[in-house]
Image 1 (cartoon, rainbow, N blue to C red):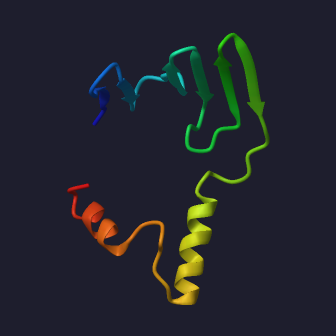
Image 2: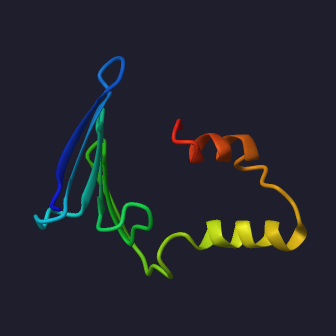
Image 3: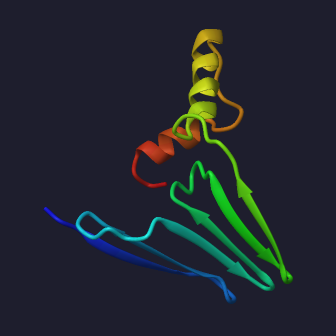
Length: 105
């Protein structure tokens, strides 16, 4: 099955969002955040970006750095340490995890 999806988010005030995904089209892999006097473009993996362009009040900053791994190393490290120590997370509680897993989050 092939799926193309476009989701529009509307929040109070002037805040809105748009996400487009496709299993058949080769869409640009770009995340863009636009605000007053600010434009941020994240290329490729938004969850683990190697290249970010920031235009703020007429000045441009480019962050271009070497990425290690796939972007979830910190989460894996955190969870592994919790298991080893027999502890629960202070970042995400068991109740929040159960709520998210139930499909209501």
